[in-house]
Length: 233
Image (cartoon, rainbow, N blue to C red):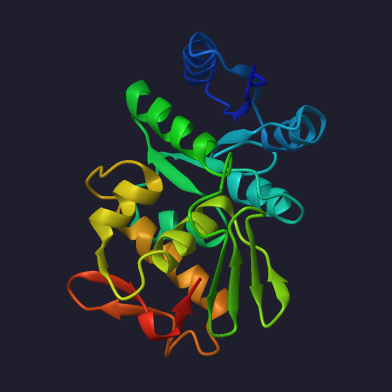
């Protein structure tokens, strides 16, 4: 029997926190709630959740500060909950390591879909090719490890899954919609910027020159392509 997945909700709005707790518990998850950033970090360290639902605007420590602290030592999936509509605010959260975001007000069906997708990642990373190589880059599928010239590159689950999907489809032009569907598990309108932000982060980590990428190439007006001439496995 699979262990019950643990979810930490860091949300200062009591009504939203209670709704999330009840809805997630109904789906069979174990749920812990914290109502400010400092309490959220303490709960994260003691509870060791499998996923964090993190509000942006929190008392004591805001969501960005909480995320920074989490990412110093853990790659636990983080889903941002935010009332901010500004595109750059969302990009900042993704750049700091959030795996995804949902803008308030949100529907519980959307939240549950995102939660299931994030938790599903990394459970059995095995596939037909357990090890992929592309120039200086090596992807160990079973261990979910990326090596660049023999040195391990730290990645969030979403970054790894995105890179793996690109590398498993070398030479193919993949639209943002396709990547959202295959990697994130949904194609909600307005979330294509999530793909662009994660591609930017991947390039910073694996390209020799992120401004002139050799591995992850942009196909203008369409999407992205993993360079086929350097991929094997």
